[in-house]
Length: 166
Image 1 (cartoon, one colour):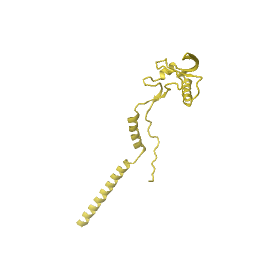
Image 2 (spheres, rainbow, N blue to C red):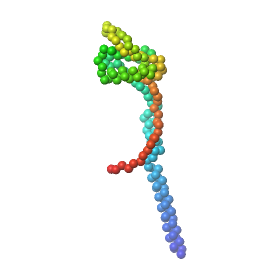
Image 3 (cartoon, one colour):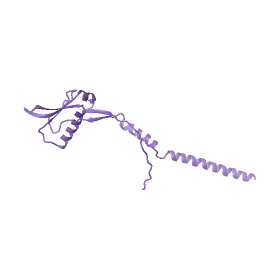
Image 4 (cartoon, rainbow, N blue to C red):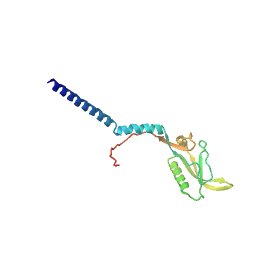
């Protein structure tokens, strides 16, 4: 009878240890599975390493290509002149569209005027900063830039676990 009890006890302890080991292994396996929370934690860490407090801004062209009149970078003396008699290029039209959009929201003032260039009077589109534009601009950079916010990590909004065939 004692021998049966010892065998039963050993078998019972073995089964209990196997169940505890299986539960422990399952918990470890489950914790290592990809989840929305895991991805969010890793995504936040990667974002913080690479993008901490980055200023978001709309950059203004450095020079009015292909026009020759350069801009002044001094506060409130900032200007860009585009000659009206210059042949349109894709780059120039893109610059003018961007500047027109900034003028539409009040950051720049757009006027048509004439200016002297190489002893000649030429018609130009003249863009200059408004007070609102100066307040929104970031001149701590090497380029003219209108700040519209700071980047921040928003998190993982959705996570789907899928099997990949190899």
